[in-house]
Image (cartoon, rainbow, N blue to C red):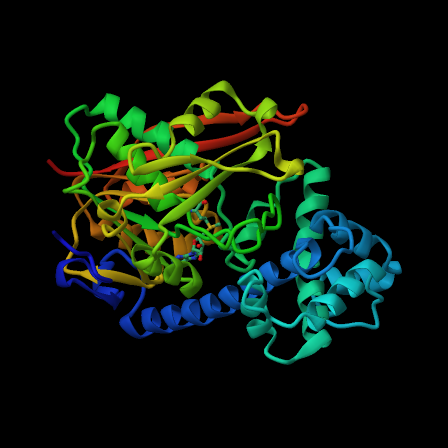
Length: 432
Ligand SMILES: C[S@@+](CC[C@H](N)C(=O)[O-])C[C@H]1O[C@@H](n2cnc3c(N)ncnc32)[C@H](O)[C@@H]1O
């Protein structure tokens, strides 16, 4: 059996060079300097993203306190609105990083409870992970993380209230590893469309860029199970269900900048129990019929399905577990990788690259680099799927020979007057 073992068939990752991008208007020295700056910022954004998760965990988890859960977006609005206006302006401009600002009492109580918690063997594995992140720096560290996280959230939420989606905010914020089962519905729909467009297409070599992990998301937080990644399993299942691959040929490789995501995926095939637990973030009645059909069949081609006993607050949500077959699990691999600054030498010639909810984090320069790296790793005639409708993506991708062939918006739930939508865009790399 083939093994992807970190790099594909001996391909090794390497840093991008100016010569890889002949149309890049810069000298080699300047190129290396901007790459070094992108790498520096990526490390900061990774650290900021993990601190955002730390704050989301402290506000919402029931594993270390019986204090009521705090909704992060509401906390952000209350926190900022409680500030005197002079202080607020300085805080939102990023000048005020630490108190004199007074933090809400319920937030401080949860921080104290978290710091008092002693990691136990039977406890949620997130607790030792987040204690490791705090690394003994105590409450001042938590307060600084809370203030930074709340600034972004306030800007995002208040922008939404003014009907101004603050798209660009994402290009500066920390890298969140958030992922939900729902994100894979758009990929399933896109693959079904791709199968109709090109019925003979075989997708055996698949790359997932940024598969994510549900460590401690800000919305849809759930710590019933240890952190999980879903996308590699959902995509493997979709390709088998559509007949676009077969278990003995399918290789699903993932690249993620976050080592916690990569560790989960690398450790999965060696687990005694190769189980993935799937729970919808929304109640069944809110979900579209198409999504419910999708969820019903999800996982059946990669393993055995078992029922999931969900606690009362989640009783109206869809849920099930999948015990993944070892042959499938062993062909799901991962490597730590920055898609903006790295690529494989020589090209692994993937049939399909999937990158959802990641391109939103990249500014135009980063997008150009990321798309060039993705294109270099696709075979001619291979496909890229993403869910980002930003117009510059289509332009940059076209310049790189990745022509958009289909795009759609899909509905996951009707919601209460606010439908939950996702989208997909399919690009084809020019070639035979
Ligand atoms: C918001 S999550 C999306 C997860 C999943 N694709 C989904 O749609 O649910 C974004 C993922 O991209 C990863 N990521 C962000 N920047 C990256 C980069 N420059 N290179 C590789 N991975 C990156 C993050 O670590 C995270 O796991």
